[in-house]
Length: 121
Image (cartoon, rainbow, N blue to C red):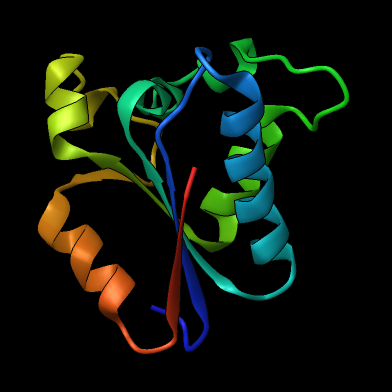
């Protein structure tokens, strides 16, 4: 993890588009600011780890989710919660290249790392 890092956990997807988009926007803004980013997709946001799914998301006056996700993937990390993936029958083979599946122990290790701060949306 980077010296300064933000760990963002997004729990919403199309079911709560404003909260979902806010998490992706903050993650992309942090990357653009040179801050290390670890974006965790949990709950309904897990679907955005699949090819084409972020492109299907739309929110007026918001940057396209696919663009925000690409920005985070280019300079940060994106993780899908193990249990959330399993509940949706999502496997590692289904994911966009560069996205991983990991569990709670990894999340806890990231948020407890020196210099890390966590946000939950």
